[in-house]
Amino acid sequence: MFWLHMACVKMRWLYMSLVVLGALCLYLSMHNLSLFKEDAFVFKKEHGQFLQLPDIDCRQDPPFLVLLVTSSHEQLFAREAIRKTWGKEKVVSGRRIKTFFLLGTTPRKDASRAVAQESRQHRDVIQKDFVDVYLNLTLKTMMGIEWVHLFCPQAAFVMKTDSDMFVNVRYLTELLLKKNRTSRFVTGFLKMHELPIREKYNKWFVSRHEYPWDKYPPFCSGTAYVFSGDVASRVYNVSDSVPFIKLEDVFVGLCLAKLNIGLEELHSEQTFFPGGLSFSTCRFKKIVACHFIQPQKMLTYWQALESSLGEECPAE
Image 1 (tube, rainbow, N blue to C red):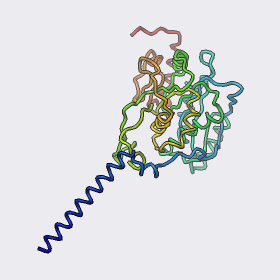
Image 2 (cartoon, rainbow, N blue to C red; image 1 turned 45 degrees about the vertical axis):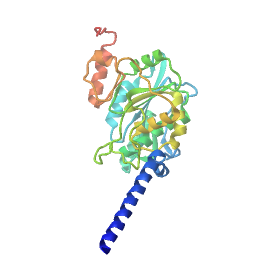
Image 3 (cartoon, rainbow, N blue to C red; image 1 turned 60 degrees about the vertical axis):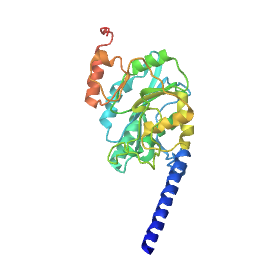
Image 4 (cartoon, one colour; image 1 turned 180 degrees about the horizontal axis):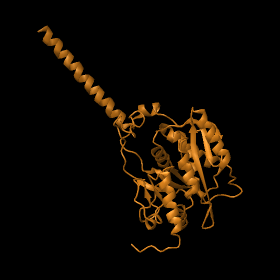
């Protein structure tokens, strides 16, 4: 009988413990997971020093569009291809265009010297002293946004894109002029209902410690998105008040949600292609950005588009 009594006592304790645990879980869910919030990673605005800055005075001659291209030390051929193609656009429809490359640092001294020389030659590199790895992509993107905030707030529009993207700067400029938006404007390939990936071996895995919520706010695919110049300062100013996350496009989305800035389509037809697109001159004349374009293809596509200037495309 004694052992039966002890078993009943243990069962009662177990039952009470489960009730308390359930109540605690309910409390945390009702209070927006506040325990996680206290331990959340936070973006440090003043992270790192600028090592390379481009040669531009935005006060003297404000650009209409600044293109910020995330790159890495080993992507020299991609940067050269961009400089010879869409990155060499300087004036479109009377509007000034500037393209810059965003880089971190590497422990390889030869690569560091090569980038420093490249920066001196082209004056189009923005660099800070954080390690240039994929997990620091948010730091790289925020470096570009910080640069706009500090050195080029006069820019009418900013595009953040990647070094394996083909960008039709002329069509983008045309669409932005038609849109005629000057503030609180963000566009790209809209991702409105994305969920965090919890599988540990996935490239985009995010733990519940990093991001405890079950859904991301609306954001634009990080392959290419465009925002009005004022958004850079707005995002920079709130960036240390939202949870830091290594997925840069989601992090920018969190900042925009904090600012109550919604996402907008640039055109009634799709113009951003993060999944890639097969090439034809007529098709690429009516896109803004296409992913998965290697340097040699970028040169080939550009030459084909240049050769077809003035040619009419059949109506679809």
